Amino acid sequence: MSNQYQPLLPSEIYHLFTRAVGAEKLFLKPENYYFFLSKLKFHTENVCSLYCYTLIPNHFHLLVRIHDEELIIKAFEVKKNKSYDPLLHSLPDFIMEKFSNFLNSYTKAFNKVNQRKGSLFIDYLKRNIVNQNSDFLAFTWYIHKNAVHHGLTNKVGDWQFDSYQSLLSNKPTSLLRNDLMAWFDNREEFIIYHQQNIQLKNDITDI
Image 1: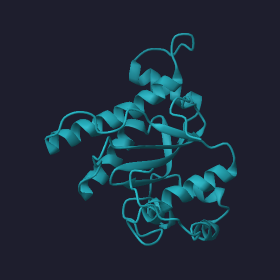
Image 2: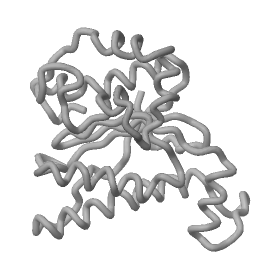
Image 3: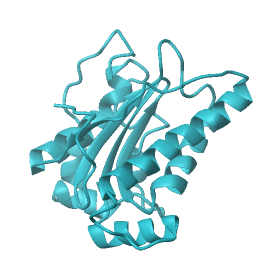
Image 4: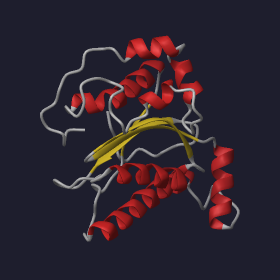
């Protein structure tokens, strides 16, 4: 079950997702999707790595692995220009700060280009923690079938703005491709797992 208030802890894996406010859209043209991914990497690569993702017109899903405590502390000390003290500072707060900066930065740029004002995302980042192997497989599949689930494409792998094809490619990627495939045992099992039947949704606001 999603809990937007559970902390983001070092060395854990999370399914992160949220959507636009009301009937707004997060992405109006292809450049928005690529800009969003560049902002994600810029603001969060020092606190997490990305397994997979999907970007839907009004919402997104990410599967991330938070870096271990040592790396987070180093990132904190570089960013804050001071020593980390566990009695004074919170690593989960620092991690969440990076994601908040990412969403705020995208919103400001989106608003400027599209001459709009106010919030773009709902006011919290939903998250599910991966507790076991079945969670990881289920979240990966859910992310990659999301575009089909919402009627945006006919089959997994056809949506331009998710990670499915990048994970199957041999081209360089910043995604945790090898680690992800290891959860499925191999590439073939990854493909087979993604051939499950998909129930369609009529409401794209249901994430």
